[in-house]
Length: 193
Figure (cartoon, one colour):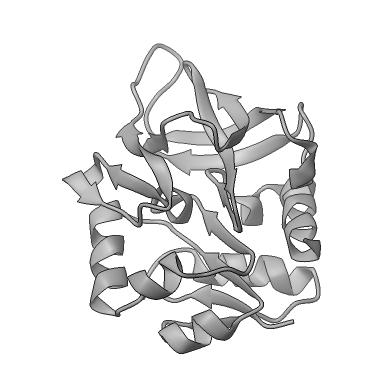
């Protein structure tokens, strides 16, 4: 299996790569559109800002390749947010693969922004390799709108989408590479799709 992690020149590429290596898969890291299109599975990782990430995607000519993928593809954290139409972060247009907009989390008592730490999932689709009650690790200040693609949520001053799924794309707002056994289970399940 050829697993590609999209290289945008920043982000959590190393930790995502190590997570797959622990599962016995050596991913290729590339920012070349043809290599991404030829992969069996593609991961769009992310730590950073939406505007800068989209500048990198557009500047490297990767937007058409990412929009045109038909193989299983996974967006992690910012990589999930980039799947939506736009983001309030940097007032960015994103890839437009999912309807909706990413918005800044609202701070409230006991719920600081960024949301950093472990949160329990409420899973509505058992086809993602996770169950309600699983704890996973989040580190984000923005979250996508809930919508028809939402298949798991976490409570952070209101329900926020933790996993979305549409067509060949699945997105995780949490960091599976930092979520222990639950994260490994999620990644293994995605690899076996």
